[in-house]
Image (cartoon, rainbow, N blue to C red):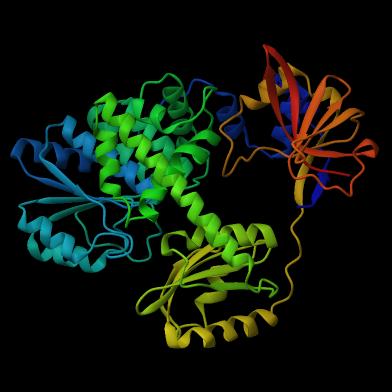
Length: 529
């Protein structure tokens, strides 16, 4: 990645907000609105009361179901957001003592969302109400059958509404007021839970995990949910989260994203080895020993997922990766992991990448973009003859192709991409600061702006006036650098061609390193000029 230095004038902001120069520069660099600044500087948020009339109608209907002793079925999804949303909804129904059941379909055998066969089974078992969480707005066939059978359907979803679904009630972020637009599926479900049973530590923590897992925009109620969720997790109020984490330090949004979310997603990706319905049971479980035991199993499964992805990566690296649009296919690739491998290849080679596996009848694949290239638009027109299934968005797609059409498909991709103007390498902007801006108090103040993520990522700083005191190569891999002003740095992806001692600008993220009770400003180096 290459960087473009951005100078910002932050004097007015610094005076108005009475913040450090570092924080005022970040606010100016990110072009934060007054409302966003207020969100960043509010460190004790509370859940906002959702005024949605539709929300109140849904809650009244569920209270009526309790009164009438109606059975409620919850249809979920197999990713982290869907698992968390299902857990919140089922736990809420349990707390209300409403008889309920739930089911998350098999990713490979049944596919995503509510299907007619699930509706039929729910009807046969006497369910009068179906609630879909993190799915439902595209389940047209299932919704039609539910209506014919006299089952009321409540949809709690956040996926794009392409056509109005035929259901009794629909709760969706697009239909909410600010600050509720942009919620995850579990975030929408939390609105119902909070209205019915009030603030619940487990529900908020689950919605926090889902928000990070689905990479939702971290403004508005999402920011509140993640901040509150992290506080709850750090207070050890939800033992399930403790069991899934591997850290003795303060838990951050990164720990949630890189330790908890992959373990939940691994269950959905490897459904021949595990069942996401059991993860819902895990989150509903109160026995400490059972919680620990199941968490160990999830950790082991995630380690298997890592190993399998690594093996797939080794196979991929032996194939032709020279084309401007990478397409790799292997019968040994696992269907649930092709997206992860596509992301790795796109990130490493800075090229759009498609990775395919084989099933009995089809070639199934997943694609990830690079340099801002719009994958969805590229494949949306001209490939109708090859695709059996296709979906996604600009950054990621999934598709299925007839085996006999695969070679034709590859040729067509190569030909079409050859006529597209080369994508210019995107320069990531870096906020220019001085070494004098990096006091411990200022860095603490900056880190307190967390959570960082979609919509408000950690800033890459360009520091121009650092003077090297010493360097040390650790384990022949990492370079530890000491600068003047008691600032240190670690550089993981060292470029051996760069003479560090002659550096003019260091591009890095900023954090605080504590060792034996002593704290120092620490830079995580991206590159050095």
